[in-house]
Image (cartoon, rainbow, N blue to C red; front, side, top):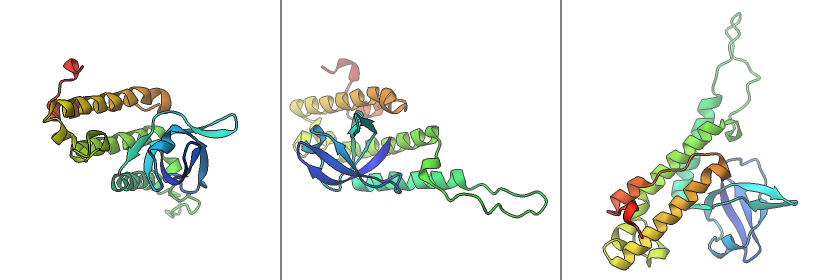
Amino acid sequence: MSLYEVREVKKGKGLLLQDLVYTEEKPVWVHEKSATEFLVQWDVFGARLASNEGKMVLTGAVYPMERPQALACLEEIAGAAVAYKIREVVDPRSQKADKSAKPASSSDIPADVQHQLIHDYLRKHYESWPMIPLPALGGKTSLQAVKSKKGREGVVELLKSIEQLEQRRPAETGCEPFDIGFLWERLGLKRETAL
């Protein structure tokens, strides 16, 4: 699982993606049709890539992100990498730091730390989600849309879609699903009675 920036889109064919976490990697061409219908150049999203018969493909759900939020997430990841790598290896006889220590790299972050960072990002993202105007709701925010019957139905469908993606997360990334129960409550909707 990583964050990717769209460098190029070829409709119906694929995407050229730059990994924003593992920046030493070169941009990679990903064979993907459906995502080319809604992603544009410079979009940032979370996803997992894999090789399938010699071609790079998306292995499951795509998690689009607003650029400022994605950049904030990257700062957290970089901070965790530095914190994880900053260990002074001291020679007890000389009390001098070991000069062979490697510089910090995001790829050195353990999987559980990466998963926690993803969950921290998602929590921040979904806390602000009700105030973000969404094309699926005719440009309204979720808080605005729930004031009408049609709008409530649209918001319920979006929440169901998010939960559906989250239920697939363990199989796709090994990371536990993120619980958006607080969103249902904040929007005054009941998951149990949603039709």
